[in-house]
Length: 153
Image 1: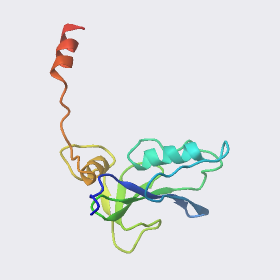
Image 2: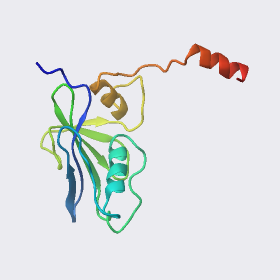
Image 3: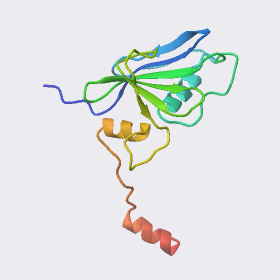
């Protein structure tokens, strides 16, 4: 019997725009290696993943990313559900869609705010933390470290 998964599995990262061809990386369960020659988009893919997981900065404008307006991050959740996070490259809130999609489905999505708020469940960081079973936990500082900070040591 296999044990339940504990983390998120990336399934796809896509960027779309009305006048450009969709650019997409597809991920398989397990280890995925993104490799290629210099200036082929590896760092851009890593920055786009950071942005789609709640980072504040999209890619710097360039000829290569001109015309792209949205990012789509497909995920397998530990409970077996598949979902996609949508976000405008301008930033702002996310839309959570059921299933693995790279275009808006007919069913409406759930808005997840970009700003973290540990007291609300409608933001992307709390959604992701709860999905992996961590929830939002208060930060507790080690008592000895706190004493050292107070005493200047």
